[in-house]
Image (cartoon, rainbow, N blue to C red; front, side, top):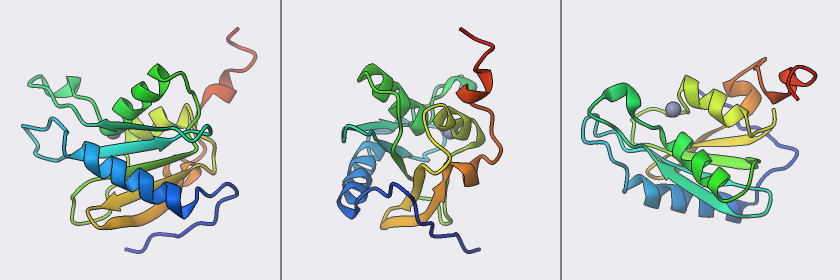
Length: 149
Ligand SMILES: [Zn+2]
């Protein structure tokens, strides 16, 4: 299965992508995944240039566990920012691993349709997607304009 390489209007620099990858990989090692043993790391680049990281946090009550993307978003919000300029995720699966369905919606809340999402493995970037590709024709904050004050 091939995955597209996209040209973005606001492509993060090569330096930023490498830094995001390294930070995602470092936080992946801290994941708490005693049940699945599937360690995931995520790193968000904000427009200010800050990077927010997160890892998955499992729980004996399985559904209560947190994905890495959710953890990174929580760190971003705690850091006072609300926009995802780029997202890197890393996992050790044999095939390309992308955000789960729930996280696609979580990321959508803070991303634009052309926000770059890099799916990485241990050696680096495996595939690049836009938000629109991962969650087409999605529902987001813009859909609530006029309904919620
Ligand atoms: Zn998820």
